[in-house]
Every structure is written in structure tokens, then in C-alpha cells.
Length: 170
Image (cartoon, rainbow, N blue to C red; front, side):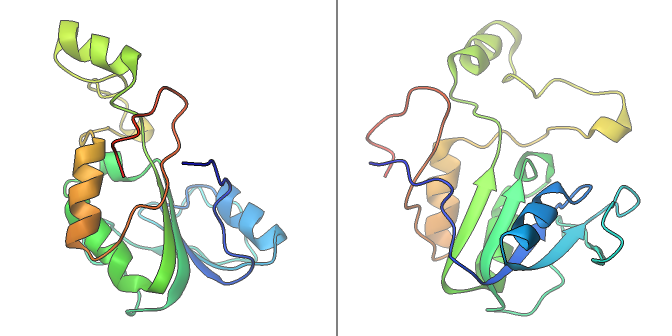
């Protein structure tokens, strides 16, 4: 399994969900993509020339079906109450043969496994009292991804991890 990153289409229409302050949107725009950014909290948005749509990703994504060539979700799914619903929504708004890039903390890392062994929760999933930081509430394992993607009619074509990777995932 080769590393093909960034795994991107050459040009196209992209949905940047949980766009934050606009860093990814800005990068995509600079590389010729047409981007629709969405976030639950739009007060941190820093690109006045591009409107950021308000959207709670625990609910339906405010977009029609089959609209996007690519959906990008960076450090989002672990904050959601129902990650399976989110993946179904990503599949719904993507065009057939579209690409979804979903980044989340690696709960399979040695550090995360050891923290779970000794403290009962994965690394980066401790309680955070500062609401601004956001709370990680849904640790997503590779098994969760495989199941959710299959149920949504999507296929995982590659996995990137900073740590060891099992050849049995795909």
C-alpha cells in the first residue's frame, strides 16, 4: 500500500467541513479548487472574501446530494456525537467516485494504547474544561471507519498514520 498524499483531485468542488479559521480553505483556494467552507462556529473565520456557512455536523450537512468532488474534514469527527451519521452525510453530499479525506487522532498509537491501558481513555480524549478547545468524545478506530464507510457505500483506498500500520486494514 503506497503513500499517495496529498490524495487530491486535480481541480474540483470541495466541501471543507469544520473549516475553523479557514487555513485549509485558503490552501485549497490557492491550489485552484472551488471551496465551500462550513463550521458550527463562524466567529473565528479569517477569510472575509469567502463566506463560511454555519452548520452543526451532528445534524444534516446543509448541502444537496452529489454536489462535491471532495469532502475534507480535519480533526472533526472525534468531536461529534454520532460519527456514523457524519460519514453517511459525507457520502450523501459527495459525487459518485468522490474523495473524502477525514483526519482524526490515532487511537491505535502506542501512546494512545498505553494511556487507555492505565487510565481508561485514549490519548487526547481526556475531559477538557475549556469549551473553546473542544472536547474529543468519539474515539474512532480503524474498525469503526471500515464499518461506517462500508455502510455508507464508500471504500477506504488508503490510510495514513504517523505510526506503524497493519497491512490487514484494507
